[in-house]
Amino acid sequence: MNRKSPSPAVLLASVLAAFLAPFLASAMNIALPAIGREMGIGAVTLGWTATAYLLAAAVAQIPFGKIADGRGRKRIFLAGAVLSAASSALCASAGSAAALIAARALQGIGGAMIFSTCVALLTAAYPPSQRGRVLGINVAFTYGGLSLGPVLGGFLTQQLGWRSIFVVSGCLSLLLAFLAARLEDDRRKDEQPSFDIFGAALLGATLVGLMLGLSQLPRASGFVLMAAAAAAAAGLLAWEKRAAAPLLDPALFRGRPVFVFSNLAALIHYSATSASGFLLSLYLQYLKGLTPQQAGLILIAQPTVMALFSPLAGCLSDRVEPRILASGGMAVSAAGLFALSFLSVSTPMAAVAGILVVLGAGFALFSSPNTNAVMSSVQPRDYGMASALLGTMRQTGQALSMGAAMLLFVVFFGRTAIAPPVYGSFLAAARTGFLLFGLLCVVGIFASLARGRMHGPAGS
Figure 1: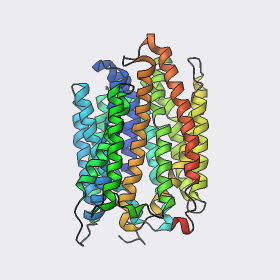
Figure 2 (figure 1 turned 180 degrees about the vertical axis):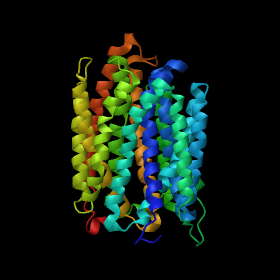
Figure 3 (figure 1 turned 90 degrees about the vertical axis):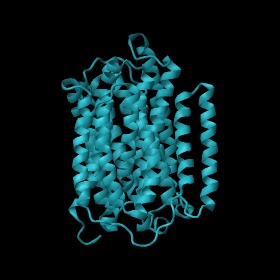
Figure 4 (figure 1 turned 180 degrees about the horizontal axis):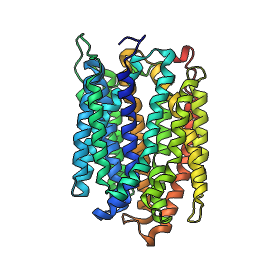
């Protein structure tokens, strides 16, 4: 692509892709109580309607990133948009919890095809001097989706039913497919090595075993699945060292502390923060008695701040070390999570909104600089893999965060539906979760600081 005059279609497609998934996720959080009532399912099963998407996306992103680097990012991006549209239709017509969860998993695969190419296409189109700015715009649209999701999701759920959320998602996916079809073809003409199917299978087994095991704890089956996940992870590391065309090329990590620790920081940050919207949506609607629309208006505070400040943080990361900005953002997020651990039934709505503003500021300071650090630490030929790995860290972190929340539900009140008799136990589970997530963010500060300099030898 011509770096002097990037096609506006790249930025348009990228920002719509960045908007779509978080919009759907945040709208779904508002709709969860309505889905639970209609389908008569408990809190843990309800959580799987969100987790199935995250897990499928996490498993598929790196394989599709590898394929996209060799066979064309546009082709994978376009196919993902089409699959997202089709799976949205399946979600909207689902007649049972099992059908909805299966359709959400398919939707996650489509999302993985989009996520593994979106940032790579954008990074390849712009020179390093403009990269922080356009990545900041991209992240701002991500948080714009998070901002609009609770409001529009609450309105749609209350006025038209929760299925209408997937109708809107399907229409946006079709628009994305139209934009994707207009992008420049970027297929490489040189011969590509064979795809590492065994490595992809081991990666999938690791992530699936980890998430299923976490959801089954403290049952014996949970520990067995976690052990199987650890064995698959060890097998993956051993295999990738000797594979002819490794899925995760060890050279991508060797001598790149910025790349390694930036991805680790992303995993920790998303693991610590992602379940907050899920827990707060349930808290506001069950314990505070708000309607979906009212809850959405409260939850909008966090992503609005994120959308407003992300472009600024992205621009700053072109001049100020990302480890300073991102580590500061991690510290602000930790403060917000610790504040949420003191929630009670009598907590004023203004206080909840204020804490969400703090969390939004932390996210904005962290995400854009961290993304810039990851994408600027690799060569152009590896943009797809870098984008996919960062996306996998995000999706895995989100899935782990949801898994931890569901585990706390099981420990505190079992696998029953959230109802007045267990409101006290639900609040205790949520407060414990926020406390643990805050402590995890504190650990993440040190991982973020350990990455070293990007604007110098360490980031080159």
